[in-house]
Image (cartoon, rainbow, N blue to C red):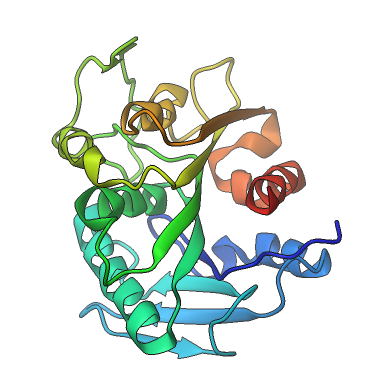
Length: 244
């Protein structure tokens, strides 16, 4: 690959995630010279953020770390809104892309369905979702068994309150935002071990006609929930999507 990412790329970890959640993926992109530097953005329990590392600019991998990493989707969404406002108004970031794992991806979609076209925020051009539980009752915490999500051709048969809220707000998602939905399957089409394939697929029912949407299902042991963001084949698929 001789191209580079032409905008800041934010990495949002999932429930209980930390610095190591995206460490391998970012190192892969740096080794391929797709991004230049890594910058860390820490967000505390009051939503205050601060930057450690190089100034955020084109081609920088921006790893967002929630110090309170057990917060709810709505709380993370509010913190992300404050961060994006700061990036545009203090760092003059006009557009960016996002890679998010598990509950982090749900938080990003919640943000987009509430204020995606806010002129005070940067334009989100592309979003990559990894193993995201879009219709789980507990989109963060592990349950004893993987939640079964019955689905029809119109969407989930039993939408959660959060999913219903996001679907109502889908009109706020910019039609220019493109989506890549990466799903893991380690047990014959049911789940990645933590999130049901059907729950991850619910993203398609949160988008309106006009948004580019691509869905990729990875199989095998490296498609397990906690390995999706450590999988070289997944890295290559994400890179191809972001460079397109």
